[in-house]
Length: 378
Image (cartoon, rainbow, N blue to C red; front, top):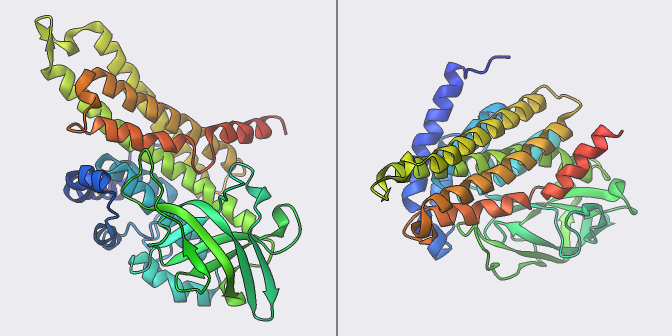
């Protein structure tokens, strides 16, 4: 158990922090206000190796591990939580193709994905099935060397802009073993997108319904065998939960730093509010909660790297803990700013809005408790 970062990890962390400071933080408020999807900056992140963090290097990936990824997403989120979270989603899709795709599929799609010349979205949730993902109704019927896909997916990040959509759909009977994973390209006839959702946060990335109407998808676009899609989706979510927890950690850590600075410069009753024990205790608790979150996330990332059989439990624990406490810490930081924290002139309200959804996506925190309890009571 070594808690110090290696020299390489420190360099990776520093590079991600600098990119966040230089390219994300100065633009985050504008992207949020204008609901602008910064594709050019995403491509710049790919030049840093952040579009294929744990994708193999023969197709342009960085070949790093999940601990490295957690360090990267914490730092990127200090600049812009919403944009960092989209980079995580793109990485999930790249990793799924790298892990479960054929060699032909890897060579066909991954060089452009790792360069972000191609942008990808992950399609699991439907209008009628969120936490109960197995209840999905999107269906693909095989006709010769194609599947005919019908259905819709909801809350899809990147919808309408992304070039590739990894879609979980039903190719067999009821239950998880009837679900397969198909890669759908943007120019597929019958593929359409709803209006951009009007969201509380995550405004630097589009979110919309994706609809499939008699879309003909080549069988060669299926990842793995029929019936393996749900397994792939759940494996993808294990890593996604670590990443989104790290995004919560980074946003909350930025909020804590802002609160520390503010409480030392804002005066009340003749002295800085940091001089009051109530403020000191609040800051101490916030720092402790973030350190605990960081340790849990890195523990889960290490378990994933080692293929520990208890990975789903550790990822669920870390995601639940880090996203709940990340939101709490950011909200506490806003409170320490008083009325100023509520203004858009300060970044606190945006951080709070962006972090709130992390308690819902990649599996709600209630579902995280279900996963943990199932492991405990097995």
